[in-house]
Length: 250
Ligand SMILES: Nc1ncnc2c1ncn2[C@@H]1O[C@H](COP(=O)(O)OP(=O)(O)OP(=O)(O)O)[C@@H](O)[C@H]1O
Ligand SMILES: [Mg+2]
Image (cartoon, rainbow, N blue to C red; front, side):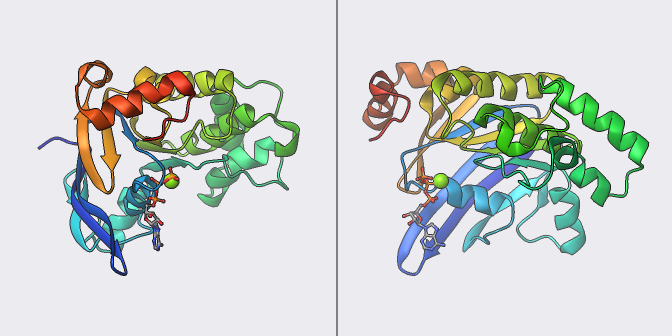
């Protein structure tokens, strides 16, 4: 078993509503895996288990073979320190300029100011931003804010990047740029990436493997070309929804 991440038979109910009904997803080191599915299918609930906001009723999440869901405090912290998370909307601190936003985690780790300066400059360059250090988040476009959010995550040298609906709320051209950014982040940093999205076009462009969630269960997984070829009616409807716009609805 050499998966970087293994989500194994995850079950979760809220009250009487079973939301996850045995979800299994494997992610190999350096892979980009997309989890797609219509609204309400359980994507965010999976994501919340991945980052430890929710505990499963049954099943586990393994990172480097260590059971994250059952881990003690020390192992949990070790695993969480590998994560970089790009939340929907980038989640920047509005009252801090771009430099301080990107420097935030480094300063919390008590990294020296010289190294902070170097790392912030390097990360902003890697995400394709220039001369923005003094700007406030509100002065930037949505796409630029996502780049700053990504730079802030990358500054912490993550092994795993988790992207939550990275193209939601951005125009299609910016969406294309976000896709390229996720791919180039993998190329440059060798990170393992999980992308939760209902944007099938994005998944089609960047994923090594796509898992399709429907009503709390994985109903199909494969490469983008396997998705394009399958006769599975749910997948067909989802994929063909592309013709009517970026948000596919079953
Ligand atoms: N804390 C909670 N308590 C009760 N029900 C919840 C909770 N969190 C999620 N749910 C339910 O679980 C189901 C899946 O929700 P989830 O947010 O994971 O969907 P999603 O696939 O992320 O949808 P979207 O594409 O709209 O973000 C929904 O029916 C939702 O109402
Ligand atoms: Mg969601």
